[in-house]
Amino acid sequence: HQKRAASPPPEATAAAEVAPPAAEEVAQPAVCRMAPKGKRFGSSVMLKPPSLCASYQLEYSVHTPSRLLRRDIELVFRPDLEDAYQKDPRGAAAGIDKDEFLREYLLALPTWQPSKHDLSEIAFEVNEERRGLLANFDVWAERVRPKLGAYWSDVSCPMEGHSRYGTPTSCIYNELEGLTSMLRYNSIPIGCCGIVLHPRWQRKAYPVTFFTFAPPEMLLQAIAEAEQEYK
Image 1 (cartoon, rainbow, N blue to C red):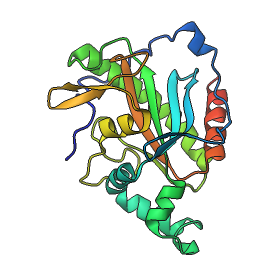
Image 2 (cartoon, rainbow, N blue to C red):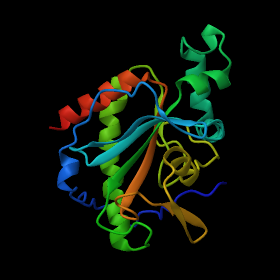
Image 3 (tube, rainbow, N blue to C red):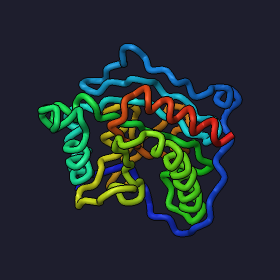
C-alpha cells in the first residue's frame, strides 16, 4: 500500500460546522466555464483553477491526471473503470485503447474544505470535525453525480483510500501524491504518512478527490446547478 495524507479514523458520529470563509471567498460564485488551455504541471494539466462553491464551503479544481497518477487511479477503481470503458461509446466501442481513453477523458477534482481544527492532530474534536466535513462533501457529491448521467464518477474515500461509492479493491489511492502532483502544494511528513498544506488554510483543510469521465462542460454545469440547489 502507498502512503496517503494522514486521515485518522473518526471516533464519533456528530457533525461539525464548516469553518466560515473569508469575506472574499464567499463572493466567488461557481463559474460554469473551462479555461481553453490548462496550466500544465509536468504531465498533469489544470483545466480549471481552484474555485469556491460558497454554499458548501468547498473549493475544487479540475485536472487531467499524469500518466503515473492515472495508473494509481486505475488500480483503485479498476472494476468500475473497466466497466465504464466497455460501455462508454467513446471507449472500447470506438476501438480506442484503454490507456488512451483514460488519458483523453479521465478528470480529477481535488476538493478542499476549511476546518476549525488542525487536521494533522489526533483528537476526539478533530475526528468529529472530519466526520462533519465528509458528510458535507457527500451532500455535494450526491447532488453533482446524478447530473452527470451515465458517465462514471466516484471518490477516493478519505478514511479508507478505496472507492467510496463503487466497487472497492485492495489498492489504496495515494492522496498525498495525487494532490501534490496536480496542485504542486507543499507537504510535510506526519508520522509514517504526510499531510498536504493548502496554500491558504494550511493544516486546517480537508481534502477529498472526485473522479469522472463526464465532459468538462457537463461537469461544471452540474457543479453550478448543485450550488443553486443548495440555495
